[in-house]
Image 1 (cartoon, one colour):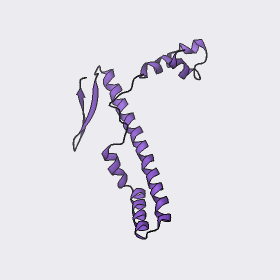
Image 2 (cartoon, helix red, strand yellow):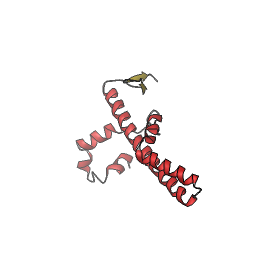
Image 3 (cartoon, helix red, strand yellow):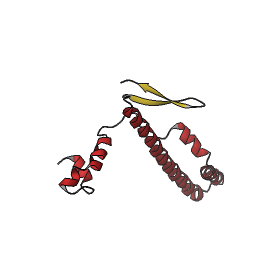
Image 4 (tube, helix red, strand yellow):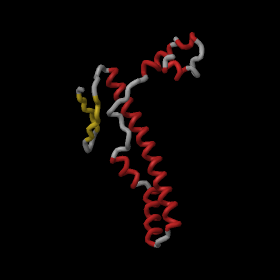
Length: 133
C-alpha cells in the first residue's frame, strides 16, 4: 500500500475522499526527501540569547551559589532543571528556525529558484544567498 495513503487514511478513509483536492494539495506540499540544509540545532545566536533570560541566569546564579556552599543536594536538582530548560528552549528554537527555513524555501521554489538556500546575516539586515547544487 502507498505510504502516503497509510499516513492519511485516518483523515481520508474512503476511496472518494482519497482523490479529494485537500489531500492532493497536502501531498504536493510534502517532501519525501530530507533537506540537508534544514536546521537541526539551535544557532549560536539562540544559545546566547538563552543566557540573557532571567530564568536561565537566575538558575545559573543559584547553581554557582550552591556549588560554592558545596551543597550537592541543592545544586544537582537546579542543574537538571537548567538542563531541561535549555533543552526545551533549544527544541522550540529549532522548530521556529525550521518553520522559517521551509517557508522561505517554499517561497523561493514557487518563484522557480531551486538549490540550496542559506541565510547570510549582516549586522543590520538579513538577506538570502543562493548556492547552486
